Each structure stands twice: as structure tokens, then as C-alpha cells.
Image 1: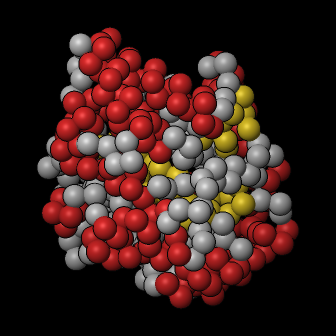
Image 2: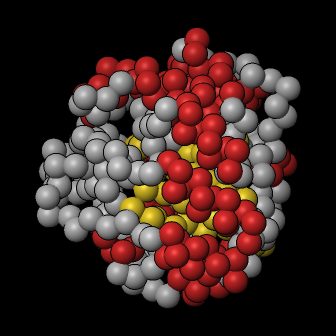
Length: 361
């Protein structure tokens, strides 16, 4: 069985498009010896293709307003109990300055998918950050038209994260009423064509999700050739239709992280905050041990950090943002790795079509 699992791992690693049956086999592994073989394989790939450095990206959650209806998310428009906020231009710039003072070289600007987001105002924020600080800027503000994406790229944005959450169109429709899977793909294609370093990702443990659909997500990541891939466990929020659903399984989330590393090779993959918040124990070191190479300290100012409640009991919402890089440095050092304070741009060669290939899914 060990030799069979090793053969399947090598086949998934070398395939132009991995076979879903092979991926499903790996996802269904339950013997700890075989699961560890998967994890060790992914860690070897990580070491060979991205090295031992762990990149730090400073995240600023500048608004929790959202038009979305996503069944799993606490920011959904129907959550009337959530106090909404939007940082001012000056507040965002102060937070960005704090990121830079901590030595980090990437500022991540994230918000809900809000109708009232002023594209010109965000462009002005991007321009000022880029003019004042020597940093890369990543955006994660959801589905917009191509014109907005082009404006922000012209303003200096380097990267964009837009998670697909699930690559199964039917499941996507069930979880995102009123939204379009095709439009999500359109956005990813637009971003790639405009020259963004483009990221996507999924949630593990969603109601209706199967090993088959998770295998489809891994194929989606491979075909997309994304610069960044984010894998997070589902964590139920009380003000959503999935309030009573169990949280995503940690081991399955780690398997998906490992497989994302194996098929993508040199994508940047975070040990997500959700992995650190699952079950009350910080499991991000385990994610770093199965292929992840990024951590994302939160620089959203208080009291807003507590109000960006995609899921409850989020880790590190009360701490001083300035303390996070030091804490993460200790975490990384304990693994025999080091904090890499580079901007951490994409390691992908863009002679290929990249995420545009997902059109053919």
C-alpha cells in the first residue's frame, strides 16, 4: 500500500492534469502512515520549489460591508446583527504604515464585496501606498467589472485574491444564491489578462461537498496555474444558513493544502488564520509543515478587527498588531524555518496562459 500511495503521489505531481481518481484516493487516506507520506511528499515539494522562507503579508480589512448572500459567511448582507464599518483613507494609510514599520513588504487590502466601494477612492489609496512605501499591494475585494480591475492595476496593485470556494458549479450555486459561477470565472480571467498575480482557493467542509468535488478543486488549481492558493476550513457562523453545520475537518484541510502544493509546486500558499482558529488550537504550524509558506498577520485597527467576523472566535483579534510578526517569527523558527521579508512576488513563469486556462473547465 505504501508503494502504491507513493506511485500515485508521483503521478499526481508529474501530470499535466492530475487524474481525479488519484486525488480522491489520496483524500480518502485514513491510515496515519499513508497520510504522513502525503504530508512529507508535499513538504519536500515545498522545500524544493519555494524554499524554507515563510513570507509575511500584512492584512488590512478595511470594510466589512457586503452585498453577498454566501451561505457560510458572517459578513453576508442578511446579517443585521453585525456592526458595519469602513476605514477612512487616512486610517488605511496609517495601518499600511504600521505594516511597513514592522518590516513587512506586502500590504493586503481586503473587504466584503460591497456595492458602495468607490473604485476611484481605492485607486487613490493604492497610489499613495505605492508612492510612500516600498511594498507590494494585494487586493481582495471580490467581483468587480474589468474596468475597476484595470484602474487598480494602473494605480499599482500587484496581486488579487478571489477564492472560488468550490469549483463545483452546482454546489457553488447552492452556497451563493443570486451569484454566478460563470461570473466568478470571468473575474479570474480578467485579472490574469490584466497582469495581476492571481490567487484563488477553497473552503473545506462545506455542506454538500464530497471527496469528488474536493478533487475537482485540486484539478481547478492545477489548470488555473494560480500564483497564490488559499485553503481554509469551513467554520460555522451563527448568523448564516449553515449555522448548525460542523466545522471542516483539520486533517482534510491539511490534505488539501498538501495537494495544492504538490500540483502547483511553486505557488504561494498561506497557513490561513482559519486553520489557526479551528478548534481553539493554533494549527498553522502543521499547515506550514505540509506545504504552506505564507503567514498573514492582521493589521486591521481595533475595534474594527473584531467586526470583520467571517467566522467566530477568529485568532488574534485582540492582540496588538505590532506583536504579530514577532510571534510568527517564533512559530517559524520552531519549525527550523526563517521569516522571509521579501515582497514575495510570484515564482510562476508567465510564458504560459496561467489562470486563463480555467475557461476550458
